[in-house]
Length: 155
Image (cartoon, rainbow, N blue to C red; front, side, top):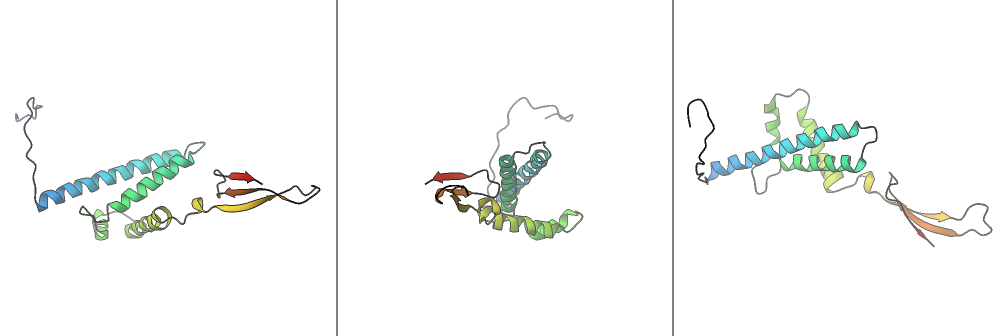
């Protein structure tokens, strides 16, 4: 390569490196990719929320993807992970640890082991109108709080 950084016209071979430090560097590269993905999801989520008619499915998908991917950066397993203490080294304002813990708690309670209101289904009976000759159950319904997944079965 020349000293003025001209593009190389011939391809040079790449030798794969193995070992502890090569794996650590690869793991940190994967964490970096995940953090960049989280940032892209968050940008798209903010844009989706500001639309005149927000797309609830898109917003839930972006939120879920961002939360799960963020948490993966701090969970070991097959790769090295960030530690909570790494957050203090970023020099960010505010209580970064509280926000971090909130995201992990949200992942645990509302995404991974869901107890969120969007998955709470209510089942109810649909009675006959008040002015009907006889009272009877006209149908059974199941609906979620946003009422987008309502299903009604008639008797």
